Length: 317
Image (tube, rainbow, N blue to C red; front, side):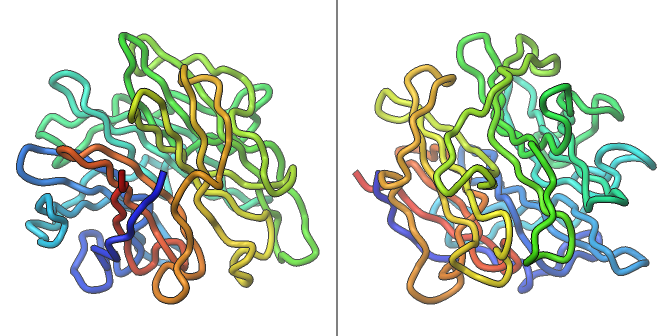
């Protein structure tokens, strides 16, 4: 796999976004139409206390990804109700066309006291072709369990035959680290299946082997079929020092599979790396791989976790 970077294509700081959001365009996710591509992303608003809330916005772009056709000026999906799993934000909203429906799998988060955050995954449906989404209920469809005790999030869903597959992350532990003021989380990639898209059965094991060490953090899997194999891209980082030291920051990892369940990791074959200079020279994170006409494309975030937008790369044969 070899990717050719096409540069940054969207910077949220250059546009007016809904919900008084001013920066960040994280975890871009696509809905491909005949004549344009709608790219959903998670952006941030500060509440009355100065803390962040994560909202979903979208930008419509032509298929050359050089022209912006529209930017959402409305609330795409409301945040969760008081006390719900997505009360304080949605990151990401993974989009799936399912027959005549457009499904949105919610990566919801809420604040905690002893640690910073808790996450779960919910489901919403759009009845207006992806302009807005409404939850099927206030609770999650996938959440913590006996051996995945917290931090279930980052959903990516696809359909193979009659089976829905979800790849997601789950927390394995919170740790204290001498280089960090607050507890840090360790999370891995897992897998679940469903026959209806809402009731899920977890595989119950870590899907992707560690590359750095046992405390490696793995995030935001995306899966695509190409040339007879399944390919997964994700991002990974050290558990501590990733904000201050670019060598500990997110990089994009790669694995492949023949059956969607068993994966072989081979980052050296992933084919995309940090740039020498510029907006993606410190980190690469939150990849999203998708087919668009006859091309295989990747959206991804760069420095500062996508504060200044996302870029595009194309797979070269």
